Length: 263
Length: 263
DNA sequence: AGTTTCATTTGACCCGGATCAAGTAAATCC
DNA sequence: GGATTTACTTGATCCGGGTCAAATGAAACT
Image (cartoon, rainbow over the protein chains, first blue to last red):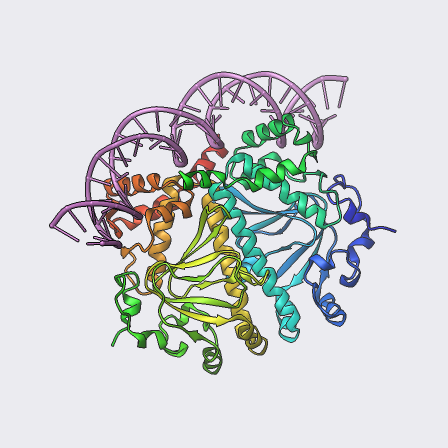
């Protein structure tokens, strides 16, 4: 048997039932082990970690993991499906902060203030592991390799946000969308899924919000990329037909700087 | 005696000598203790932390703490002066990631890859504490409150970058500069310095780069803010003559969203 | 099946801020 | 002290992408 919940990452239609078994798997049997918190832990330590993990029933589109202002109790790891995080201003304006795929950890920004500073909403039927942070912290006192892994994860998150800053600070709309698609592609690949053929679980509006672009711009860019033969779009189904060109697009981005410097 | 090196945060002219004594102070006597790593530690633990801190000679404008690609060995804490961090593309283009004031920790993004992913350059004569990360990690295994403080610091850094994402993702040039000035003001206040009267240690070019704006735009905005009576500018000397207005400017930023929602 | 609702696409227009181009003022160098 | 370099300011122009408006298409509702 394979693991249907993982391979149908974003393909589970609304309301369909996910195999409950695939959600209850222990860390040691989880296909995400090398992407997740247990990375680098000795088997017996994985068991100890496993013992504090709460595996709740699957969540559905629109469900919240937590909302901004909630007391911080747990970190969450996406197991199947996807989750978006976003900040909201009192008036209702919202800024999408990230889209989270299986193995990615959510809530790290809440440790400092002991309260959530953003909200997390499930984009499609998803299974999520809950890690009560108090227990995790106790555990990491007695497992140095877990502490190290925690530092690494927090650091990785910082480095990742830094990359987003680079993206939003300088690049053109075209670069932003190309970078976004490439990021998804690479993350799908790491999870054993097709890097060139996938479904988007988020709307154009959410993509635009995330990238600091208007919906219309996102839509136009998809059309243009399609016309240029970079990809095929059908609604939420994306096929990257020229991944190399998309990569090249992202890499040669800082050229304007270069041109300025040599002149 | 007061601590001249702190009170002259950005006012030490190039080449002038900083009191060496003020640099060598132990953590327990450091005015930054409540802003820095020792926060929340028992006195004996502060001593243990103190014992691994390396206090090097002051650095001067243009000196590097580290460069992108360097092996990661230590975290750094600004003690006096200021430091900028930036990412650079191979061609020479650069994106300023942050300006760091006394008590702020630099290098947290390097833990994951065990290599620096950005560079840190001193903006003015500055004293910096070096924290060898291996030692720090060992220590944090035996001092749970230090481990907790590390988690908090890492988390705070994530939350801070999230705020920058919000800024760069949505807001107008005006909002960006206002937010930047307000951030500086608040950070100076926390350090016991004037929140309304300070020197900028970074150039207009660096501010623009940081905020995703052209130098010319930054310059024009300073002129406009001056005309509107929000501040006085003389070269690098800034006086915020209407802090309330600047705060209001930042807070009422998401109004466009609101307008859209009710229509 | 037909209606409502919401998401996406497409077109027309406009504006904020980038870019280009001087000019001015400090700081650094002889 | 004068020359050179670098930083900053100001003005003119242009364009990428936002905004507005409308059409089209999917999906949910009755």
